[in-house]
Image (cartoon, rainbow, N blue to C red; front, top):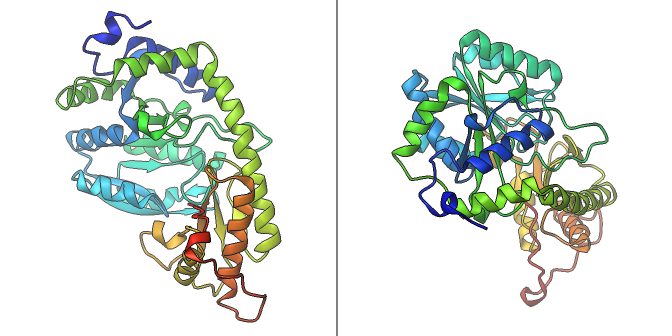
Length: 355
């Protein structure tokens, strides 16, 4: 039952009960090194990123390095917040720390557990190099753990990068993937030296997040209901990913799924010579929405063609049908390779969404 703490104006950092629950939960499942007073509850990651973009210039940091490829929407959001951005390439081990060092920046936003969009998990060596860089330049790593609850590899999920350098890392999480985006519930784990600064900035913008929602989420954590929920949805998403991989192997053997088995999307690397834009358009004509890899590149055309394929909201049969449609769209670029899929009338189209 909600009490005075939940019904009154909340603390801007968040309800103490939720901050305590999150500190314990993140320590247990991510090996995060934190205490409740270093946790800030936010309206999703977007608010947390906005607060950081306001805080960094006060520390003399006006440029934020971003992974390339990366989230184009985040890039626009950061630049509209007044920060400059610089792209740093991602390879098979994660962000290129040598290029990061050469850039001269002191802050970077990374997705180390499941890089967006490639799905690559940062290697242990690269993680150590990134932490060394942050310590050498007295810099800041913003760790965006956007889909960390969904790990399907047989080996354990890597610990949070924050566990290696809590004094140089802001860990960011959200309930948008685990529950629903509409809750607008996220959290930051903040280094000691940033805690008071971010609290002061936050207090200029609002009076904290919804106390009822915070109390409910704390109950989910403390009662084990969140763990039970996650076990159910992990099984569901694991099955969907397996069906997706089987469909790709059967229908698109020339494509390669790269990255770790995790999250709610897969990255399909396409063979050389494929016209990515034409493929995306042809798939859309078949009522299948996929996004091309160029959408996420700072310099389009530099990397091989690819597709970012989401599978969280489709039934199993829909996944197979959608990949069949993508295969048929790809065949348009090599006429005669296979019989064309019958073009569906508008009234028969499924509206399948991948991405």
